[in-house]
Image (cartoon, rainbow, N blue to C red):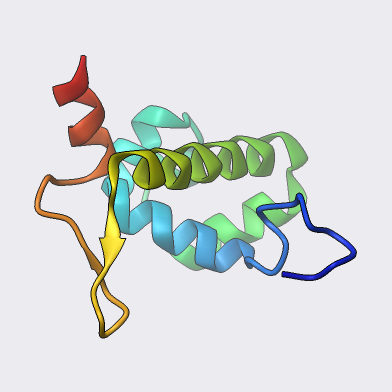
Length: 102
């Protein structure tokens, strides 16, 4: 972590990496339900979403907030990485786990 931004959890994480993580966790359909943005609900793609998010601060803020909430939830619930670096989780996505915890 860069010493100039020790309390910034997004430091060094690209928008593309954030979006790919969220798509892997939720899928496009659930992501569109969580954050109602046209680029998530109508013919979604990484490139079109990145283009929109880079130009629209409010949408980017929502995506970053969901990302931070998701990784925070994963840490609290013990989601871990295997030795080859892949995340291992037998319980399903963050969305599925949150529904089970209700």
